[in-house]
Image 1 (cartoon, chains in turn green, purple):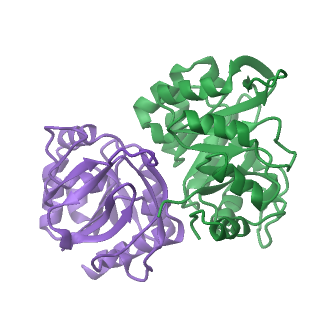
Image 2 (image 1 turned 180 degrees about the horizontal axis):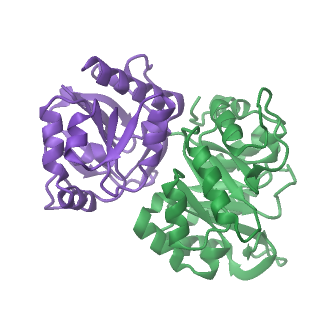
Image 3 (image 1 turned 30 degrees about the vertical axis):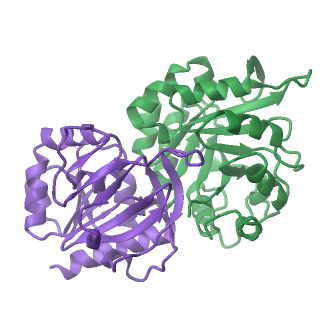
Length: 253
Length: 206
């Protein structure tokens, strides 16, 4: 029985988890390795790390925490943030990460997707897309640099191109819904998942169990991602999984 | 000490870390003498069948692996490492596998509701009793990443199966040879238990 995945996302800055994490009995709630291991115990199917460190010497720090995560986390994990070259891919994968997510770098240099897919396999190339509905409502545009720059490019078309280039998954964040807790953007998720053959991870807007259900059932998402909702213990991963399972969606319990 | 075969096969760190986490000493090597001295040998692997066989040949590891298994040292193939120990694969026509066991590797059939590669958590059934699965309940979940799967000639060696567009043979065991199509090192508690069972087997073997 193949299952839908529930994925917590951790923001990392200077090798520390930012945003509050309310795990009891955690010696260090800012340590990526400890937090990730706690999420493994809590039933997470994977973990995504988004490194928002801005400093120029970020790479070595990043490799160091990835190495530490890999020695205590025994579920798949993805690392994103500031990855620009095939060599970056290689260095991070070598430390034990399973997948690399690229966003702005792939927009600026789409060949990065194909080169990485050729070298390391599509399964480890995740293309992250930040999408926002166009004002005329005709669709969604993609944004780069953490949602700051409108690329005037259609999100569905970009997702299709990413798949063609060799992406193994699309991590799709709705900028309109992100932080609202009013639910994922079902229309956007559906538009993308219907047009690509690779898994789509829905992101942005989760507030309650039903939102996860809708993203999968109505939006066609293979996986659903949430950050603050889990960090602040507003919902437990096992609650979400129980809810989905009771409604006929296969999950790993 | 368990040896992990080093043949440039991408990510072998995770297997090493998982074994170390379980308290086992690990050596990553392509030196035949080191492999023959180890209490157990693991062949990991991601990538294509042909590239992997080319590398095994380049480092003269095919013969070394045969000696390891002839010496009855417990041997575990993981993911592509399972595929390589059989005869051939549809992924790389004309390329010979290690032929430690009989059978071939075929592509997961394309169907509308099936995405390939098969990525994610899937549950296991146990058609035959396997030592790797001691203490593990049927329907436990493990993590898969693959596009090709095994059709073993002798069904009695198949110790775990899963469903994904086809009945996928997920694990085999014959004498001292073990293999998993899934990634035990990425399968949380269940996966660690499988690796622990393998470590136990290497200890009993001494």
